[in-house]
Length: 65
Image: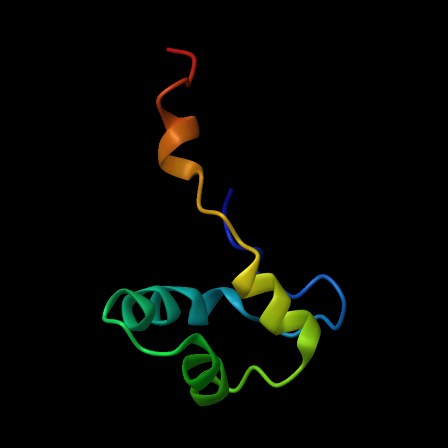
């Protein structure tokens, strides 16, 4: 749903990088280059970004009111 604050495996803070990652990917940049530029070198942090599915907008439609 929402990107975690820290990587589950190594504990590196990653949430502050996610917005820039999404913007650069939307512009058409290669994901490998973007992850390298952001300083995500460990495979656990990279997998967190590559495997994340942003569902917050979908789930927000069903909130109790």
